[in-house]
Image 1 (cartoon, one colour):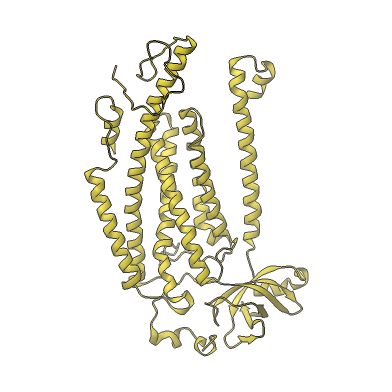
Image 2: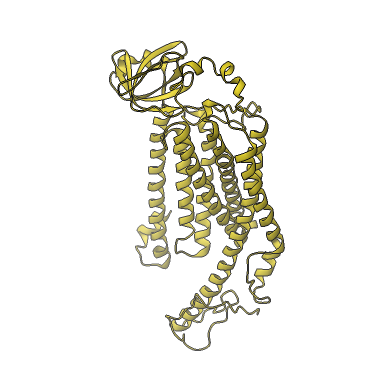
Length: 292
Length: 162
């Protein structure tokens, strides 16, 4: 990722990459696909059905539901960590802000998947799609909080201000993760208590069911990494494009208003004459950032 | 801090203009956060008492009256009877049992010796429910056909349809 960072900060010197894929991410993508195939086999063929009190085949929902929940936790943890690194002046950079956003976006996808698979699984084993117990309620709140975080990231504001606010929201929203995880122990819930991540460290699951679950977690981790790398790269390119377009627009407006205080905005040269056409596609032009 | 700035220089200076939307944003933020907080506390307050166990419900029967609440207990083996518009059975928790009349179809996993959560109210001694949820445990064991009878207790004989 540092190579990408070096590459794109010198966009002027090198052409903008045409794809977000690299040799490494293609290998990662291939391995992820393979793992997903193996997971399907393990979940549907190799692993056994559970007992009658667990709804026999319904147990197979676990191999998607639990990994996606855990990876959502991880995504939000990464988002909070990157947000903190962004807020801390010594480490502040667009890199952490964009990585936080990419991770939160993938995390929101995973938490949505958790809610959907849990709802279907719940209909089969509990008999209802939804109930307002502590686990389900806190998870729904977590989902809404990160939708809010993603909305804050899109507010039309100065990039720095927006990123700072998003970072604060990201950290606050993450505080809900331990509440979600512990909800089944702090309150009475319809949702079961932890099977694997238990305080007594003795998983209540055995054999191939446990291995399938752990393999699911591994697979979803690979999927998470692949999605985040690509989402981050797209965000990074968008950010460069936006910065170049914005710098140019500011310079144009300044020239229009006759202000010439410090026209050099982040290396974007101010246009010579009056702005040609204010309605022109300023934000859409390819960045022609030239190194000073 | 921002307030004094507003009071002394009303919208005249550049800083005053810059601070007013920021103040408004802070106020909006505080309102939203406190509303969310109240919602959480309220919601979780209810969720804290998501269900009453059979023994607690029996102890509080007088104050509960005909109020609607959720009741939890384990279905007693051999107590399940199909009735005209649902099922009748007994649940038990911590040695206290409650007779239940459930109207409607029970969930597919409904069976003896499984914990259930019922929504409804007391009608005299009996609890009448119209929404039943099966509470499955965190214990995942492989299904061994030869073990079903021994490990799942007297379930076999009483299971619906058996």
